[in-house]
Figure 1 (cartoon, rainbow, N blue to C red):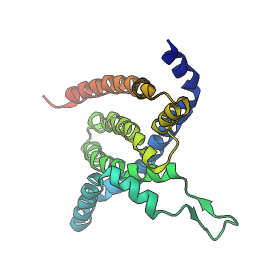
Figure 2: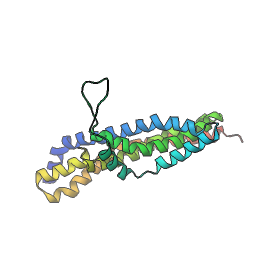
Figure 3: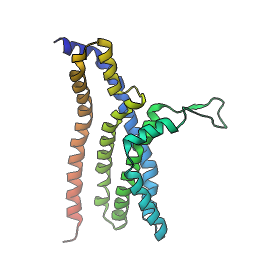
Length: 214
């Protein structure tokens, strides 16, 4: 009972941390779209060497080790960037560095799958091209879970705050309950989206089947 009361007391603090996980995932997803979609168009370019280079680039980006990228971004990128039109330097937050690192997987995934969707659209199969949407959402959910690695570079997200709770209470036996409780945050966020994506994918797949010539 005492454990439940402790978890409930710290819930607002943990929820604020989970907000950073969601922000990182959304940012990585948007960066993935911003760079992945143009790359997909290049992969479908009529110029053979452009398409070939773009496909190889997509494959390399997609398979970059995410965990290592987080460390590289944290070390390589400066904490502040000076821009000519700004009086004060622009701060590069740690969470944004993590989002950039996680966006590599998104860029590769988006470019490969949007390339397939683009071909389907050009072939007149609109239903098949729409399968890109549930696929992108699934990729976003994977990124949301991977955002828990942000704690290793000092981002004050959910996992980091779990460690703070354990240290603040001084209860080492609270470690398992706190981490299990934190996993419920990810489950509550991801499960409804995964369920909706499954339904959407089933409907789109049915439309693809109906649109095929018999």
